Image (cartoon, rainbow, N blue to C red; front, side, top):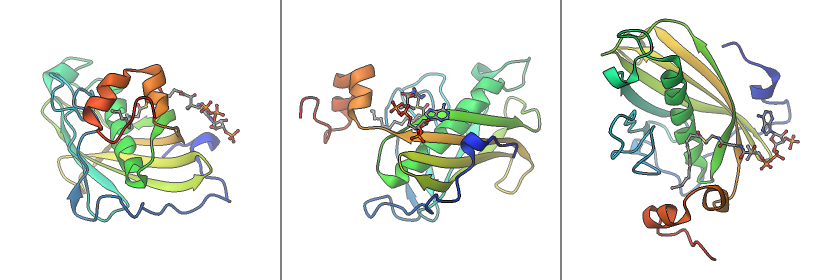
Length: 184
Ligand SMILES: CCCCCCCCCCCCCC(=O)SCCNC(=O)CCNC(=O)[C@H](O)C(C)(C)COP(=O)(O)OP(=O)(O)OC[C@H]1O[C@@H](n2cnc3c(N)ncnc32)[C@H](O)[C@@H]1OP(=O)(O)O
């Protein structure tokens, strides 16, 4: 993976540990928002990622490239593939049970991805330093050990839940996350 210093964990970074309340190994993570382009079941042309964590530390999902995801004729759009990387990485930080947002996403495109391809996505965390999480992901063609088509490295920054209410739609968050108080 071609990686800049921004997405490389510093020597003092801690090794990540899953939160005690995180989904246990073998379980599904669920969607954080039903209309999310990455994981929402109600998004008509979204990626519809349904992630599982096999071990409580990494996250896996499959993405089948559809016609709505084209750039060149019958080939996946690079921005859509970056979105898939962003989403699977975003799901992996969910294991820490704290909200994070993408601050920087770096992507290597290794092979073209035809429409109809199923990409096997996997993401994991390389280290945490304060509010900053250093993460990585890959997408492999056709099988978990298939050829790599896309790689990504990311810096995610921890925020509070009010970040989403302040900048987005607080009522929509409260409707889907019943433990979130709009005016605590
Ligand atoms: C239903 C809803 C529930 C939702 C829950 C889950 C949602 C999941 C969604 C999943 C969907 C998928 C995910 C998505 O798509 S998330 C959507 C895409 N991302 C965003 O919208 C984020 C937009 N950016 C921001 O809001 C702010 O800039 C953030 C919050 C990131 C930082 O602003 P803030 O004022 O808070 O903090 P800070 O500026 O003091 O920075 C803190 C530290 O970080 C370092 N830094 C920052 N940026 C960069 C950078 N670009 N390169 C290198 N370094 C950077 C910075 O130097 C500093 O370092 P240090 O000085 O401490 O060493």
